[in-house]
Amino acid sequence: MNEAITYRTLRREDYPAITQMLCDAWHTDPTMDHDLEMKLAEIDLEHCLGRATAAQVAIRAGEVVGVVLGRIDSHETRNGLNSHHVRNMRLLTSLLASSRGRKALLDLKRYEDTNLKMIAEAKKDGHAYQGELVLLLVRPDMRGRGVGAHLFEWMTDRFRQAGVERYFLFTDSACDYSFYDKAGLTRRAESIVLDNEPHTPKEDAEVHAERDAIDDHLHAFVYDNETSPANEGVNPLGRD
Figure (cartoon, rainbow, N blue to C red):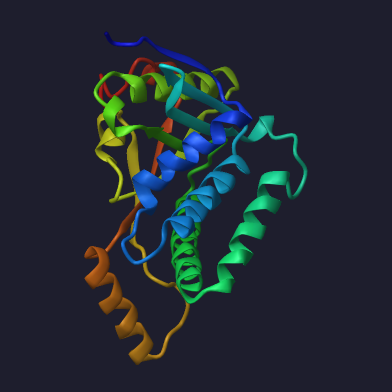
């Protein structure tokens, strides 16, 4: 018998389940132990929570099976560093204790530098944003049931109600980014995730060789969209 899927506001007690979902989706790696995988997933979640001002989860049989986090700039009431930022910095610092952790820290920096560069270029081109879709994640066994579409529409409704005219999101080629194409968003920027810091020719060649061996280049994207009434009802139509 299929359990009904319900939706509610995110609670602190949901964090472990979402951390596991993040680990399963993006942080499993045969070169690292499970504790490090989970730490990277926790870093990911704390980074997202530090930016989010609105959140909803999908529940089935008492378990979290989907989550959306979003940021509405005008709703941010936390000044400076919030508790999630502090927790995130502590977790990042703990990565320095091992060589594998230090490598993971470098990878995180490369990814973050790429995202910051892309959004800066979008803003330089005249694109202004008042909101961000921070995280949209559905457990694999729940995909195809409209969970992602519901969470996506819930967040875009919050944007509209708050007067957000345009929002953006970061994603990459390790995700089902076609979801956003089908939802009618615009791919505003794209970049290969490589270290943006200067290198010697030898170091630069090593970085490229490493990335080729691992994932044949991870592409990062910035998508954006308007929240005008003309876009209302545009959704992935059952896609997750």
